[in-house]
Amino acid sequence: MDPVLLLLLALLGFMLAGSLIAVETRDLLSSVICVGAVGFGTSLVFLLLGAPDLALTQVVVEILILVVLVRVIITRRDKTYTASRATLPVGLVLLALGVMAAIVFGTLMTAEEEGGLQMRRFGDPLLNEQAEASIMAPVGEPEVALTKTEPRSIGGAYLKHGVKSAEEAEAQVAKHLPKPPNASNYVMAILLDFRAYDTLGEATVIFVAIIGVYAILRKVGRIRHAGNVADR
Amino acid sequence: MQGMSPIVKNITRLVAGFIALYGAYTVLYGHVTPGGGFSGGVVLASGLVLVVLAFGVGLEQSVLSDAAAKLGDSLGALLFLAVAFLGYGAGMFFVNLLPSGETGRLASAGTIPISNIAIGIKVGAGLLSLFVALAVFRRYRAEQRSDTGMEA
Image 1 (cartoon, rainbow over the protein chains, first blue to last red):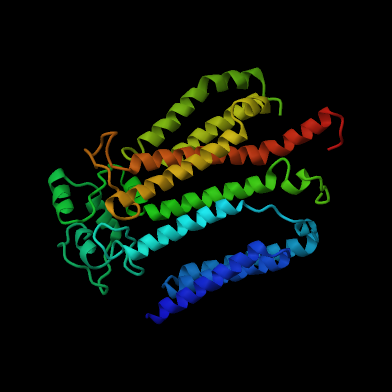
Image 2 (cartoon, rainbow over the protein chains, first blue to last red):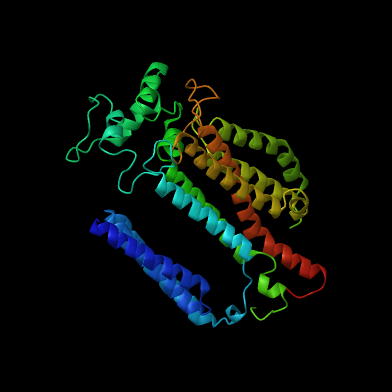
């Protein structure tokens, strides 16, 4: 097995353990430190995956956030976290775990079969330098396999393959290649077709941020609602 | 928050519909003209914020409740995720499997318009709920306390 992949799996396990401890521990300071550990694990993952600029940003942000959070925790001396917290119904948790296990199991077991649930193999992006790259070749260049020594403009490739005529699209589909989105607004073709994963991630970030704002600013918190007014 | 003067209210009555129309246009035609789900959703949310600012919290409580905004936020996110899982119909996550159609028409580009609508709903409702949470909750609470004679 690839040593980098092993290291990544070990880091993933470490980060999962850190997240679980951060959620479950009763001590707010330990929770914040666990979140910091998960963040540093993320930056190591970025480094191993070959994104040093992201790793640097992650480290800097993590240090800043950790310092701010620790400062807030130490200053407030808030004891409300020691109250018992409500938990989700067991059936709901089991259902979620079952769906997750089914997706992971189905993806892993049927990946090799024709027509099975497929995810891209790790380290094999959709726009790799093999088969798909020949169809994503930049404008004006022959449609040959790109080599790693010759980086080319990906913007040109988007411009070339965003809109195609019906015959070209049919030829692509016959060769089992992704068909062109045919959106005249190329930005949307990139955001919601070529790079839709990124957009899904951004939408998730906004969603979680708004949920967080609501959790902090809602009219009546759960603890105060239960009759405990010690938090203010 | 009592709302603003009659001038502001009347002008809001005049322009709010056009703002909403422009937002809907930006969302629906995102794959044809510049724009898209995010910008159109922001236009829609700013129109709603204008209405809330001009007419005060009473309207917000009755028509544009924060529960509805939260519901829209969640529904938009789920719809976008559903579009992503729709790709499994063609074998892989996020495959654009609907017919591409003719470039420049409204019914083209496969799943991109659906994703745009989902993001438009999500961003519009999300930003509105953010505004409601940040600007209205506390002031409304303070007003309620002062109305009932309680010290804020």
